[in-house]
Image (cartoon, rainbow over all chains, first blue to last red; front, top):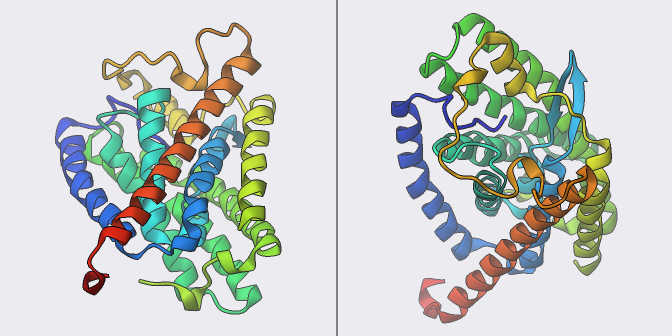
Length: 211
Length: 101
């Protein structure tokens, strides 16, 4: 899912890098103004957890693997504003220290995973969440959407960069990430259920969520 | 809160330590598509040569310590970021004039 350097054409990566910087600046200010201080200890530990989880690839069939993205998980524990900031920090560390995801493609990866990945997960639960069963379904859908939406955006960016013919590009990217998203949804539900057993008040539910 | 932080802390250490052993070595979705559709060769290095590239500390010669130490470093960096960001957030609020909160 992390787009490396060289895949995106210069106009695409320059535009997305230029757009990402002020957007993330705004998210940082907004988080500093509104973040619930009782959740501050979670900022570091959730960032570290999602980073570690992203290191582990699981097979998704046909000789391909996927890994947790964690956008919905962060959104539902930190709130979407702080989750976007933490996911951006994860992507920056991955690009600069581990060379996973390109430096020039950082704006694209932030748009795909830190913005779309987090906010699609957030909106799914905000719009659908309710009682226990609906909340579970909404969390699953949020996890799936966070991966599928991020993959859709990545595919559009690759398409705009003319890396391959559109039809096989969209079919293969979306097909693989539909399966990866399913596993993301299952893992997100499982982790949030575990959190609910430990500290239920630290999970955002549909009716509590800010827009 | 403390239980939750401890649980995620231990879970992170577990993932870093054991993840290497169970992680699939198949290419991920984008790598697979790039290889199949013939654009994998476009990958470029933007001039950075990190000693931790691909989640492997170059100074270890076997896989487990190389990947576990890289994972530990990444987790520590992210934890440090969260702690610093949280402290900055609290300090800014303490210093903010009351009527702008």
